[in-house]
Image 1 (cartoon, rainbow, N blue to C red):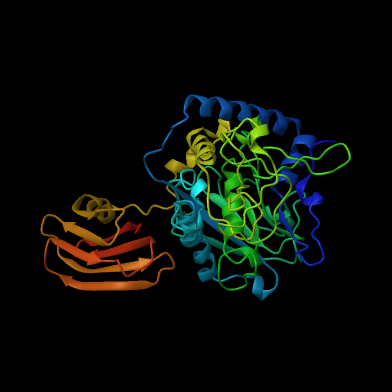
Image 2 (cartoon, one colour; image 1 turned 30 degrees about the vertical axis):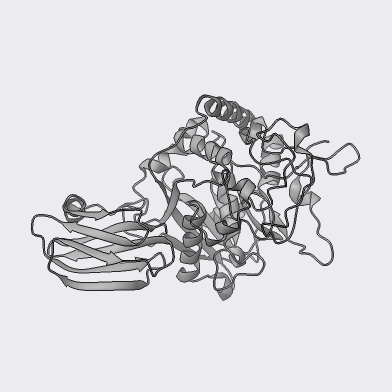
Length: 433
């Protein structure tokens, strides 16, 4: 059998980690073999993705897509009940990685710099639950289950000790729990009604603080699994020859991978750290039909690899994600998330403020300006980071145009909390210096 289940294949050497990195390939393969409806639906989506990318080679969404997240913390022991701060640290990583704002992108080798691209996707913690009530976007469920496996997705149902999902057309469900010998796994776009649609991450691989475990302490397990959730495959070969030996192949440059031709062919998996001068070269790219006119290094630093240090998505990978976010649920897409109200708190004051308060330039490299119309009195403006920590506060603003210098703060996503005599408004600021 030429196709292999990756997580069964990978058994690390004694001086490495005996931890399976990702179970998505195995879960997808099992569903394809055991569920005819899923298999047919997935093949249909593969064809639709390929056709769409052929017809939209230079597609750009031109607007930032924001995906509401609900995190279901399922815990038995207190250390598994991770803190809000640990959860927020993961959201911060996602917002940097999917906007190419992660600091380690400066390590991108020259050959990949034209290929590494901003996904124009952001994530927010849900503020409205399925019943229309205010929420933190976090649910917590104490369980009697010691640890969870992938088979039948027990963490995704209260009947098996887990937590039920919120509607997958409105939220990206992420379950955080203790997993059996696994870092995480995800569902993939299929057009099949998957009752457990979403992502599962081990509690000690989620975020960058708290219970996290090195070398998976940078929040990239979630980045990797959400890449699968949005339609991406691994960048390394997941096939063997008749004797079970690893071979060279262009794993994601296929129908099932959206014909991503700007990630090189790669033989087997690289486990280890990456810097700009240490990429491997395991396959001769001139033997494959891809975007390269000469042999190039493996793209070990791609988020869809298994390297310990990863920092980029490629342009063609983003094309696949663009299709996923443009197609309907029935077409295997997740376009419904774009119209979700999961992150919105609507009301007279907020709608009013959206018209009366403008923030520019946004994104900004340093200074941000606030323009207030109709003589609205501003009591104070608070700038907070994604963890909700206040970093700047200015009170009693008298002018209708006010400017703040943010150049001393690291690039990333911030929020301006604007309190006026009419109420409160929140504006998202992207510092992209």
